[in-house]
Image 1 (cartoon, rainbow, N blue to C red):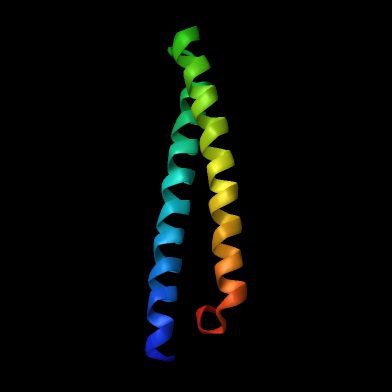
Image 2 (tube, helix red, strand yellow):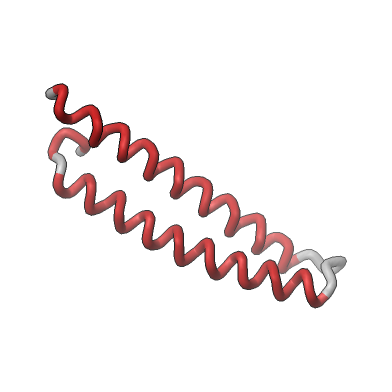
Length: 75
């Protein structure tokens, strides 16, 4: 590993943390969708959150994969 690889390693770590946060938000929203005590308005909002966080997760995952593909030290 070279000193120049450190910023890439930090960027990958941050991207992985972002992925985990998006996944956690999407899972929580999906749990709300399955809860029979949640009213229709909250269910609609949870559905929007689940969809938006899933899209953000997919984009963040693609960014992370691209970062790893361009930096051999991160493999």
